[in-house]
Amino acid sequence: MKVIAAYLLAVLGGNKEPTADDIKDILGCVGAADDTDDRIQLLLSQVKGQELAELIARGREKLAVSEGDAPMEANAISDGAAGGVAEQKKEVEEKIDEYYSSDSDHNHLLESVP
Image (cartoon, rainbow, N blue to C red; front, side, top):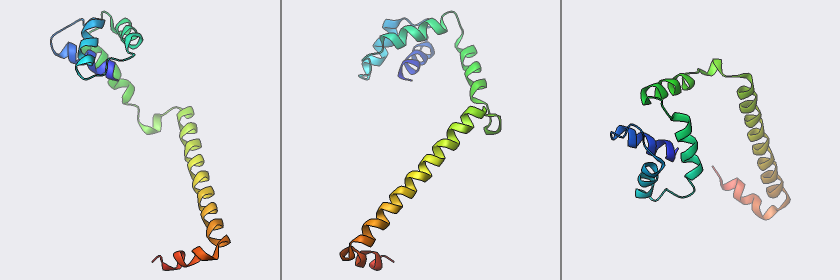
């Protein structure tokens, strides 16, 4: 994202075709120029010869997908993640119950909680 942001800043600042050095200079101003050479080259190769307005319009189209239109794979992933979180929560609750039921010295703590 930082490379894209630097590219956008350069273009919005009047540089219609920023170079890798232009982007590095912008990133260097905020101390974020580390390990960006490959990412800069990839970005510049993908946007070469394209207008910023076109790039933004295509990006908006991709982001405009509503939740109901999401691909089945994405829904499956999110459902799986939700199931994993629920399973982890259950495991934590079981461990807490086991801890407090096995040590009678700690039972008074549970009783004092409103």
